[in-house]
Length: 187
Image (cartoon, rainbow, N blue to C red; front, side):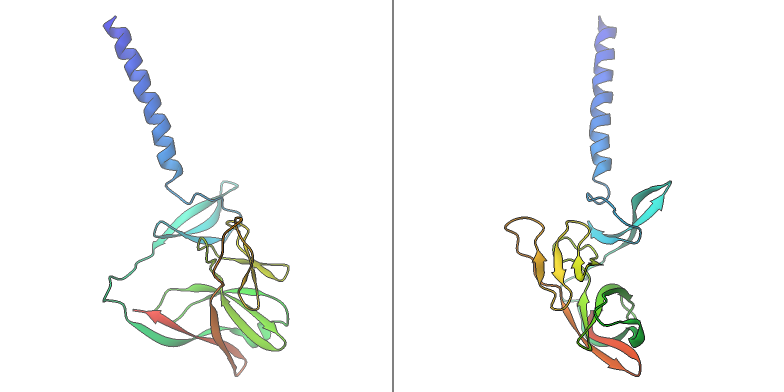
């Protein structure tokens, strides 16, 4: 009788561990599906990139996003190269990863509209996913929200009743065949 109780308790323990162990693993990475190679999001303080492994799209954890403590934050205004002018065609949206000197890279959306260059942040204001160009709009692959590529305003909300903030707009300048943005970096 004692042996039967031990067997039952062992079986129950193993079942509970397998159930709770799997749920703990499921939340270890981003909870949204990876939809295309190169997609990047920030989840629980880490940058995750979508990669193909064994024929499947999976999230690969990258660098930790470090936020300085209050009082340590110092900002500087910098001018950063975005793209060559001839790479940005009228009406065509291009997502570019910008790499400022001595700061972390970040994605921007670049479009030429009526001859002027417009540069917006390419990070969704809802979940922090990198938006992509889709039929003249910027669409978040994480929850299907959409933004106007000219002014950054949300044109489609992820859920009824939500109110997304617009994408941030950068001051853009063209000089000697290159496009630059003015922005602040924290150090």
